[in-house]
Length: 403
Image (cartoon, rainbow, N blue to C red; front, side):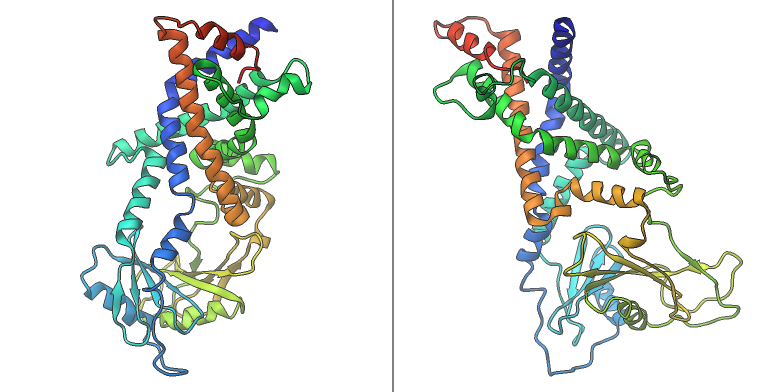
């Protein structure tokens, strides 16, 4: 048992040093982007609101609002439209994958692109978190590195728990690992910090890294479905992201206006708080085809929904306006429910602001774990001289449980 513990300690140390820098980057960026949505909403609070011309004032068609954004010279093509039930809310037009434009729904005035600097800052940190901000062909390499480092972090968390496990469950034996001790310096201080931060962060870090595995690897995502007795989805991307097909009209038929399609989707959820329509194959007419055409998908969110991340996906026939498919969280099988929970537990969003705060604190703990791990390794391998106090500090450190 002692030999296994020693072997595990050295493996823990070596892989921690090897992957430590990437783990630190992922942990730090995890802290930075923890409250991305809330901070962007706060920064764009003024541009999101418009003056109501008069009660019941008519709104411009969504197609015209999209064309106004195109004509404004925004870089990239509109990819989606989000409307809100409040009469004084601007319409949000998504551009590409990260940019947005706000439009006055009554006048068609393009109000601006929001907090572009802040959005760019968060987008860069997300890219750094996911694939080390690598571009082009290197993105796959960066994604592989972060995925492997996340797996290493999970191993470090579990192996650290084993190394920490006290031989005697007494308060005296556990006290050095439960809270910070004053007056320590050098190795004893780093050892104490490593144990205490690891102890309190461990449960959350295991959830964050395990859910990160499911996001990073197809086999891990499929395993979630297999473990719950469900068939893994064959389509690439998040579960449920496959396009719904509807029968194409036999002859040239104009598409329904986007306002009509959005209104039809809203009828399925009277308490909706936002409705997002993904823009696809245009708004002109179409005619029959053997394989059908893509449905128009509207995503509805409700303010008081549970789980907090749940939404309703409404797919409509763009020519008739009929609802082809309606899917809510309750319609998911157990595998997809668990997979969705893991996706939002990774960011803490599954439990709201408190969940995000806990995830951010644990991620910050990950940064300090890397720092103290590096400091302990440096002293172990590269310490050239010892002061009179170091033997006492080392003895104090070694009297505490390892992590």
